[in-house]
Length: 218
Image (cartoon, rainbow, N blue to C red):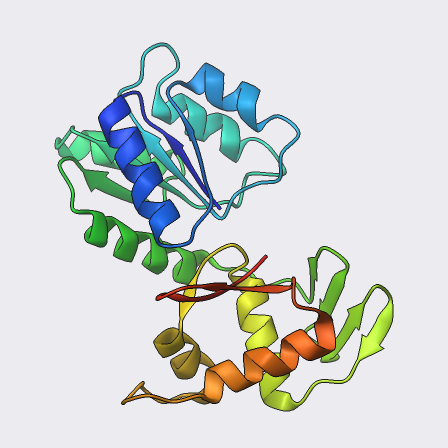
């Protein structure tokens, strides 16, 4: 899940369309006030993309409030801005930003920055919970609705990877590198077969296929 706060409607809708087309869920707002009202009662996203130059409450103030809340203090944030002065960048980073992207930017570059920030800031809990699924990464035990499910070593590693990146789409290449530790060199059914096995054991609704891209955990 990606949350965008951007007052320029063309940029906001471009980001919404692009990241939704890659399989990510997106919530987008045009102001800080709308953002805090819309996010009330919702679970924290994987990352925030915050424009600095916003009417009313600016992006830095939004970031300060997020860092001051127990539920959002550790959620990574990237600042989007047309400002290029070094002091502006320093202010953003000292306020708790994880990265700083100057407009105009390329969408593929921004996506790469997001992935880099998520890798750098990822903090794994010993127990991952996704709906009625509980993954104890220390004991390597998986429970579905309280009932233990037996998984092979690679099935567990694949499930753990998807759970850590819940809501984000992972390509077969990325999964192969992370779980099997080798690069994708031609067609292989390894990932697909393990996804099929997980669905048989955990239910078809746990892992979604994003056609032409890869897989994500719902």
